Image (cartoon, rainbow, N blue to C red; front, side, top):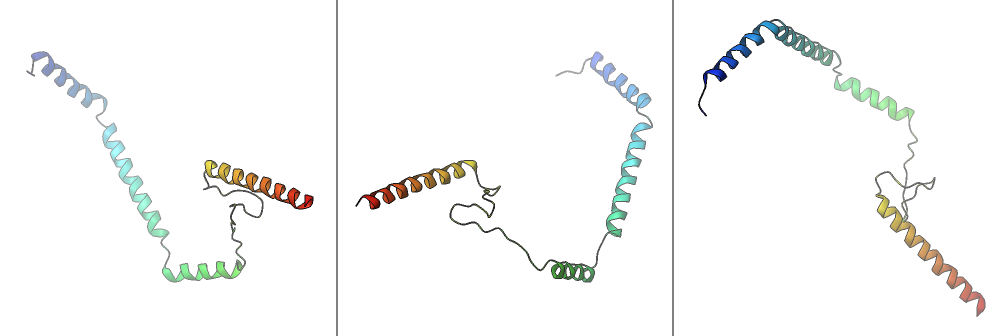
Amino acid sequence: MAKSKRSKSVKKMKAIRRETYFKGKEMEKLKAMVANTKQRELEQIANVVTKAKLTSSVKLQQTEDTKVVQKKYNKNFKDEHGQYPIWLHPRKIRKIEATAKKRAKIAKKMKRSKGRT
């Protein structure tokens, strides 16, 4: 596409407008960004923990929390409170419950048939 006089003049005026309105603001923003990054780096350096301190703190926590209760899931994936785990898909939960109902129904029929004979 050819460069017309109008597009050139518009480009020129935009450059002038940019200089007048955003002259000092852009530099201030850049300086503020640099100051923030320097502050973050200093904080990270201050928070560095040596390996010895870290291992000693972990050992202290292990001695305090000797009993760690883990949830164990049996065939139906329920924990001790009868809740399903968060990671189990609702479709899978419905499937498990449906099979449990079928098993209960079959067991009930078997129980009735044993009582009659």
